[in-house]
Image 1 (spheres, rainbow, N blue to C red):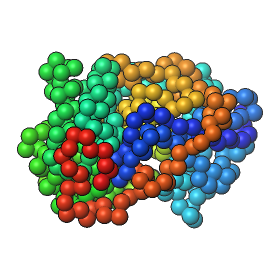
Image 2 (image 1 turned 90 degrees about the vertical axis):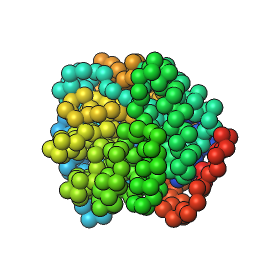
Image 3 (image 1 turned 30 degrees about the horizontal axis):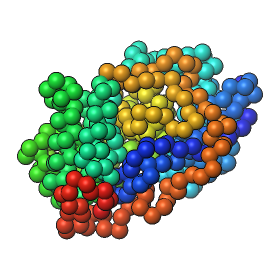
Image 4 (image 1 turned 45 degrees about the vertical axis):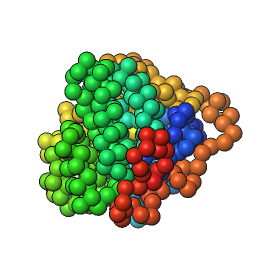
Length: 391
């Protein structure tokens, strides 16, 4: 079996409501979802979600190779980007191709990836994550009521602009989940997407912890600030979660050496091999891992095979347009199916018929860091329950 080519396309995730974080909001709730399809000479195609940056250069490392040698091919892709570096979106391209190769390998074996990787249980614990900073109070409650109906008893909200606003919103979500769980105490997390300085982080979280029990605070300061993350961790009760934007083991090493992270995260777009290696590194430090991403299906398979998986992020309950996933959500967990591979079916005709794609780089996008991030003297939003402003 040989790799013969690739195809790229971009579909969309349609949330039906505003989605975003402290950095910005997609007001119409339409988010681009790039994907890669890798073809073989035996008619088996693998699917990976992730960017296409420098894909011709990266693909040249695996073209004509046997896709079943995925671990070695992953390292070939890393070496192919040696001079320019593999950080950022290029690492996402490597991850998308890597995921597609794992998909092919499992299809050839006639097994779902979770079984091929040595997983025992197809159920993967989940937590709700609504990308909800642009919602009114009523919309927030409605969104998490839907998650609660699927058995979710843990939730992560977006915040970081206003202590009292965050307290209010966390309390609303806590009450929704507690009611659904008949009084059982839910787990609450706050994600601020690198918006704070060290002092801001400690002050903000300590104020929240006067009345709330936070499981973790996510990305309180910049992703590479090992000393700062450690300072935050020592100053609060909650765990510090980070890692979704780190690309490569070498970026995790300083954080782990500094005791700067309690919950080790990896993003689905960085691929299966990256997740497995980071999980092993975290396990050596007695730390749990938690996958991040809107469509985390590949890492859900991988999560079944590692000993230190904690919970995986569940964002939208519906798959991206034109994709079918062999999984469902039940009793607070993703339940993986038996389809060989990772269980993604692509309707190429439907995706190719999309006439307009959103611009992830447009002004106000969550992908653009605000000019005043980390330098706010005053709360950026008021206490009105109808606030939609991103600040």
